Length: 529
Image 1: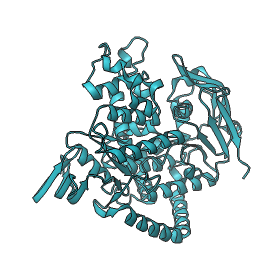
Image 2: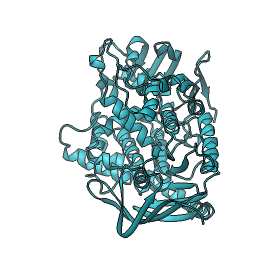
Image 3: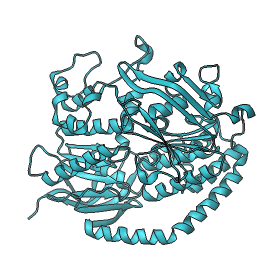
Image 4: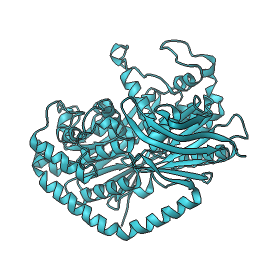
């Protein structure tokens, strides 16, 4: 008889306030490798958080919950990475540190804490920390060169690989990888796929290897080792069975969606047009950029250099963004894509020691950050983390804050703003949910809300740093359509970072490709069709 590893019979999932999923029945046996999947907000994240102990899994009447890994489970996810950076922001002591820079915990310290517990600031590093350079998990995750970099200075992909290394080194028995390929470059995805297949196939045979589970928002890059699938929708199990049976369902859904795709796309385009028309009064209401500046490049960078310590991120970069030239920015993890975007948004202070013009104005010549940001729409990892820190904000107020360029809302929304926010929420599939709070949404739903927020004022430049992170198939298709329609409107120019070739839009004819540690460190590619 096959050994049962986790048994859930007539159980519920709840948090401190309410029951989230009222009843569950599920079993994981030795030799099975499970995929957990489902749309944003459908219950997938609640399920994996309950398995890890972050939410309560409790038996109902005559129920039973047995989990061999109850005190030895770790999750590597976009949610966990965002929470980690949020912690670093909250503990930042730069204003008390000589030189004004507190790098916070390094990757080395963070991973070591997974082995021996908290390391106090200023304490000498223990032997375990000094041995990490040679650890097989560190080498597997490819983070040897960034061990001594502060977590807050790592790219999204680098943080995720650091979380994975910590989980492996801490010897947890059960490892849940939630949407692990999002934001990873091709090489990192290949390494992670091989890792997953190898670990999954040998779990239970080698006591040093953890059992493993995969969580995904959509059916994409599924490792061969997956044997079973559990799908959540509407806070309950929608499918539970073999991979082969689920693949039949996916094929049927794909055929049905393809048949209706054009009709749905046209309907969405009409709805967006109506929404833009109805909210026109709030779009770029104040515009200080005069006609002379409008005729110049939207952004111009001349011999730009950015780095810290001995680490150079951008070297001698010359680049220009003209109106209606939509750009794709790509390159491996840690190549400087986010740094490049933060020079534009003003979130990297080295913009002031470089020759960078935005809307014809040289940065550092007396303009305020708000003079710049009121013409930008932004979706980024940094913005997502900042909004998580004001997570009690209602969805309505998050959308209204897009008109005001604020994080959160500090004055009551007007009736006009409230009406506009409701229209945008309806467009994004959040009709009737305007009073829900941002912090109570799943990671993917949060991302979708922030994309809507970025688009409401029809900005001159829409900056999208991996906008589809954590989105399920339905939201992803809708967001990509939204981006394409906005680009084709002629008012907004896109600047788009993604590692996923399927997310590249037809309108993105210009490519800035970054090549770290090479000379030159970038290449500009023009597509002819």
